[in-house]
Length: 115
Length: 114
Image: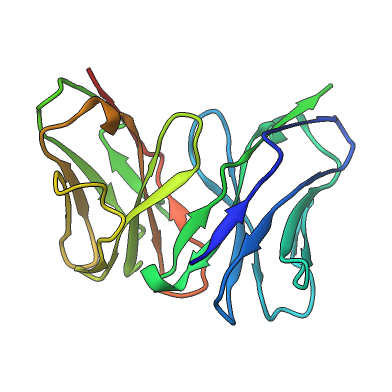
């Protein structure tokens, strides 16, 4: 079974600073994928970034990067140059190969960006 | 192109009534997923479709929950004899095919059972 742990219920960061959101995972699959989604107060789930377990490099998408440490089973999201619009819930998720590659989500981290 | 759409966006119902939630996936997406998100919680997987087949219904909370899909298009999630604990946001997602690809989510249906 796959499991995602996000230990930070809430985080604050000042505008223009960088912030790291933690995610650790547990899986018995030899090959797996990790995702981060953003959920603003409006409720939609927005795909941010994906990391495959066999990818040689850490994934990056604009201001988002994934600090993937396979041996430590961690996949932390780094947001650089935070903006007020980054205030939202952030969810880490892992693919569940037993359920048609559905996603197993963590409980999320609430990020508040302050001026 | 058009994203995943869901209807209704909000639904208020009385305990014991049946409700039907609809999801229109992105055109061409063969895999479709239903999730439930209770207030302040992460998402729980309910069911997935590959085409119109549902190989995994293990996430459905009880036999009051059922879902179907027509071809590779619309899916409906039905909750019979609703209970207050069914109150949640029900999110639908689709992806091009099963595998290590991102899922794209709809805006969700907010269900409140009184």
